[in-house]
Length: 250
Image (cartoon, rainbow, N blue to C red; front, side, top):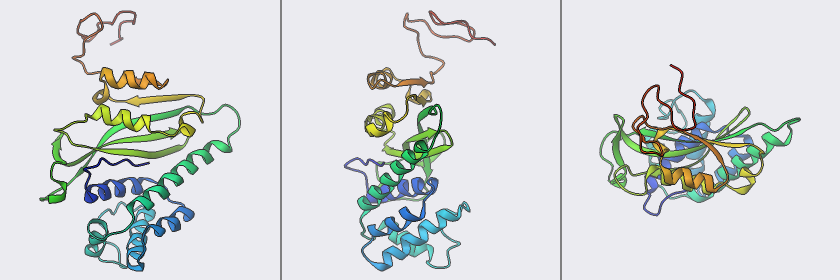
């Protein structure tokens, strides 16, 4: 589900993991399995408080409402204490795959269209963070950590599947990271549905990204900036049409 670069700090990894876990519906089975990533009872208690806050779905992301553990204790657990992040990721990945397969297993009739959505999200951060040096930038007025996310949408299922942290001023680019996420999707997902369609906005409208998606055999819809040129070198204007396409209605 989650892929980190070699230089990604543990603090950055935990920030994104928190965002992913908050968006996932955690069932009882995976809830208890997640606790196996912590060898010490103190760490298991902290993780259980974090998961319980997410399950309550109250929109409280700073854990101030918790009466079992202080916000400082949870912060130390997420940012400093040593526990098996990889074990937790494997559990979340397997739970996501099981959830996806179960959503298709009991269906009757025509299978639904599966949509792969790539997008950029920002996690605002204030202050100075030495471990996040090189990762904190300002994008669209938001100073913080910027992440390329991949979601799976199939019928009523909305599942965050993977992410990569994007360093705005460095390589690889945002479309390159998105292409890697799509390429690393398990074959069990890409081949499970008969109709798979990828959606992305204009931030991923590069030729290399679209060629890579086409090479995977996926259909896609990608937004285009207004200043992009057509194949013949002409600039699209409002009301103008590219070769072979009908004029856009106003």
